[in-house]
Image 1: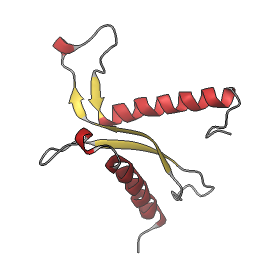
Image 2: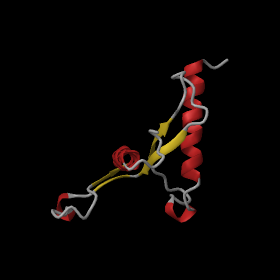
Image 3: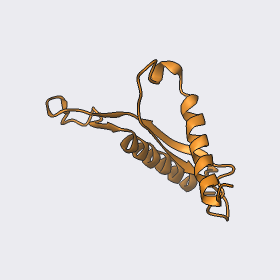
Image 4: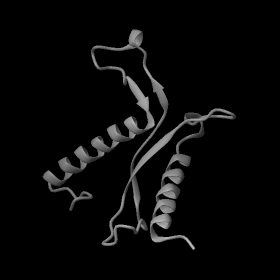
Length: 111
């Protein structure tokens, strides 16, 4: 039988894969191609090992980095497209949006 922590990990993985699968097929690897995926999941439970009702708030996929010749000094190109970097950037954007909503008195995940 799976432990509470194992079940937590399985639920987080399920939520992340379910969200990734909802991305249009043309935006995901095809055939024998592959990529790396990273997700951040928000849970709302008094039990830290309960992922029921969890929501993916950030997701990124990729495994490339722009070489030195292609770098853009104006900040118009994302240089590091590794999944965990993109997920972190998406999470920061999510947090900033939630802070703005909370500050304006609009219902947010922090309300």
